[in-house]
Image (cartoon, rainbow, N blue to C red; front, side, top):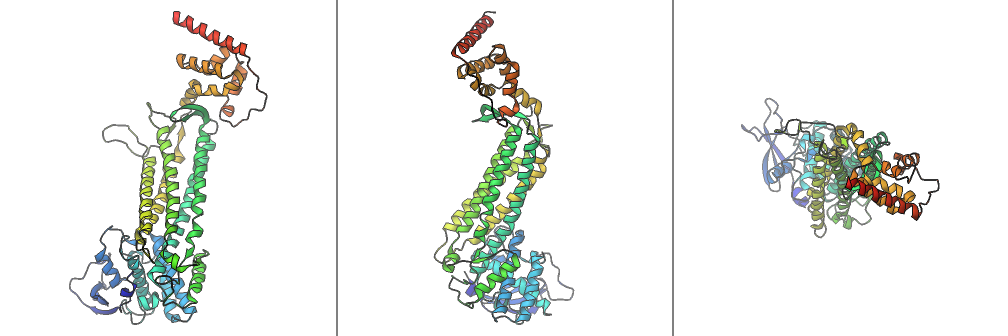
Length: 526
């Protein structure tokens, strides 16, 4: 992983350079040197004097100009890395391998980062080789340089507090990085679950609002039996509730860590008591009951938990995308489509067709789902590509899962705020569709029999006559009885049929069919 190489002694020499390397939006203090010279096992480089990061971060910036996205785009990852380093500092003091004064400075630096400070200093790219060493070293350097300031020293004076010897004490990238990834996923996952819950509540509220709005149900895009629009939206709410639970189920898996494993799981360079000490302090700092993996060799090389989380995310995204497909279809038109509901107009839909409004919010959620499905493939391939005692591809796994978590959270929020809350039912259109829909005849079959119901349906299609009118005209049921049987509560199954169902005799059915045939013949002759 490059930890041995990273452990090459860093030395620092400050010098004034007329044209220093550009920094991340930082201006040197007036009269101060523009760079400082840092040296590692590969040689020396000039680092911007005002930077909290150091030579290892600089090498990563030069080596991986890939995605143009620094790890700071995932604040939860930065904060997770800081809390792991904070727990390590506490544990190292407890077992007697770190000076308490240094530990206090490291802790303060970590607390500041957890509060949102210095995130812009975490500059290495999300796409990187080295199995996360660049991310770990970026964190070590930022924490060390801030701790040096706290102790009254200049940035880069590592003889007083060292990024590796002190901040990275008892650690390896191979146990720090996966632990930080899992913590970051846990933090972000909690935010997603909460937002998914708010979206489910919004859909449930629409379900209640539309509880008496009858509509035509459809199977295979063909007219089926009636239901209420409220039932449809309540179903959306329930399916998202299921996914909330599936996502929660992954949290205990993310709480299993391999801190103390160091390089490959044998615990080399760490005191035997370190693993339990750091686990305890990490649990205390995060409020999450962390568990040390029973087999650190296995835990250091295994990426199965990431596939589980990614799979749960894909499931949620695909189900949410299906809901958005339905919203787009139900709102299609407004004149030549389904037109059952109206989505809030969010922006002009065309540069050439005046007045056109598109379902832009469901569309963007669909695209988020497509991206998450693709990210799941990436996670799967990266997990499979691990070799022997380590998976070198955790950076792309972390990026893929954290991006999916972020995007799905934002997608749920914009769908709720900019779409669901403002949906309106087109009740008149829905009522007209139900009235002429032959699917309602299904509710009459227990009363008039299948044959009579089929004949009624055929006539209704041929004449565009409401089902209720044909049944009453044929004398098969009274207007009151038809009205009761075809009430929204009965049709949608909200009201159970508790009274006995009268049986229509064969003679009544034959007489009805004969009357329909005679009527049809007369109309044709006319």
